[in-house]
Image (cartoon, rainbow, N blue to C red; front, side):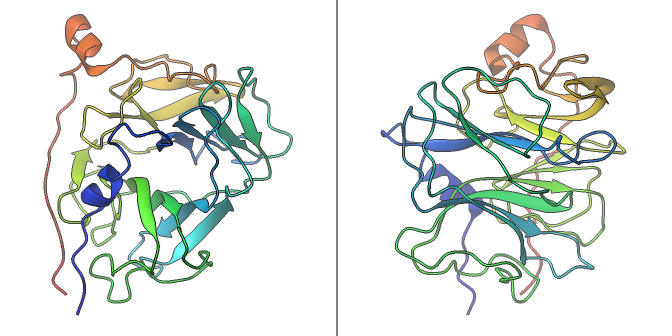
Length: 275
């Protein structure tokens, strides 16, 4: 019998303010044009925290491509968060400038575009993840995780497929279609393309005010938020100029003060298909 696990609960286990907490801080999985050397991800956490047993994984969400299977793995076990509190994952030959004190992990490969869920995984004493391992054997929601595994943080991106699925504590979707885990946050963007997600300031939760999303344009290393296609992030913001430092996104209280926090329509829903 499927054990009902909510990704919201799993993600919140490591957000209690204890020493050693780590978060997904931003992901550009689908840069404008060719992905090539332009993809990146960033983690934020307590300075110098060892990432032993941690992996960044991608989980397939397309209904036509066996949802729930692991389609991307980057082993973080040999790295630590930088002395400035950040780690940036890059492709060898990348064009970006990174702030001093940042741990730089290269050769990250090319993460899958949406529909996909990105998870910061801690395997504890469990087995390492493997490609094509299925975390949703029935295509109806997350199964019980392997022994020792913990989803530390997660974010899902859906491309509008009616039966696509996200396993993230928060999910951004092109439209209102798709399925999420019980208790997760669902944000309906209504855009044609979604390329970038990031945490708002130093946020640690998985509510709609904790994350930003955007469609991106430009030529690397200058990548900016498209007009009308930014959620919790201002049009024209250069998303690649602050790698290794706090994202260029104000905290929610700041958004309220400058009148930008309510510029987009949200829908928060809870969905789960029948087992």
